[in-house]
Image (tube, rainbow, N blue to C red; front, top):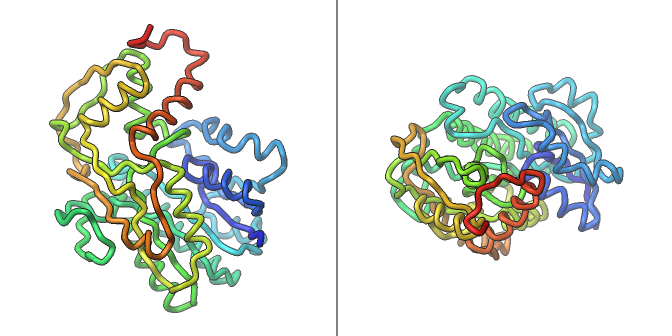
Length: 328
C-alpha cells in the first residue's frame, strides 16, 4: 500500500537516496529542507532535480526551527516522518555548540510536536554512531548503555534519542533511532572524508591526515542505510527502539586511503597533522538487532562501494580535465 512520507533533510545525501527509493516503490514524498549553507545549495538542488522536474515530490524550503512556518505550510497527512535534517559534522559542532543544540535538539522536538499534533504514529530518526564516543567495548551494541560522547554534535544525538523516548511514552509515537555508521556513496557531502579526499587527490593536493592513520571506521554504503530506513518505516513490533545501521566491518584511515587510490586511480599525498579534538579512535557497529528486527543485511563491502562512488565521482569530473591520475 502506498504511503505518504515526510522526509526532513530530503534534499541531502542520505535523504535524497531515500527519496529515490520511496518514489521508485510508488510512495508519495514530501521534503522539508532549508538548504543550509554548510555546503552549496546547488549540490542539494541537483540531488532532487529530476524528481522536481517531473513533479514527483512536494518540496518545502523550510527550517525545522520554524515551527509556525511548518504548521502553516505542511498538510500533516503523513503516514510517517523520517527526520534526517540536522546540523552536521563533529568538528564544526565544537566551534558552534549552541547552534547545534538549537538546530538538532529543538528542531527534533518541533518535529515530534508536529507528529503529536497530526497524529502521526511512526517517527524514524537519523541518529549517529558518534553517541558511543570513546566507549571501548566494540563492536558497539545498542544494549550497552555506556555512552561517552566527546563532541557537541554527538551529545545532541543522545538528547534527541531521549526526547524520542519521552514522546513515545507520553503520546504513543513509535520512535526508531537509527544510529548511522560513517555513510558514504554517490552524492556524499563534500566535507566528509571520502569525498574530500577524492577531490584533493584529483587535484594532486595533499590530504589532511589526522593522527597516525590507525583511527578506524565502520564505513556503510548509502544503499544499505536506505534498506534499513525503509524497513524502519514499516516496523510495528514495538514502540521505541535504538538500532545500529553499519557494515559491521572496520577499516583504518591508512586502509581507506589505499582503497580510495585503487578505486579512483588517483595518487594520495599525505599531510600529517595532529589528531583532531572530538574524533573518536574507532567506530564499529554490531548489527544483530537490525538483522533481527528489520531483516537488515548490508550488501556492499567497502571496495565495492568505493568503486560505485568512484564511478559517480569521475562522472562529476568530466568537465574538469586537469585531474591528476595515475592512469594518465
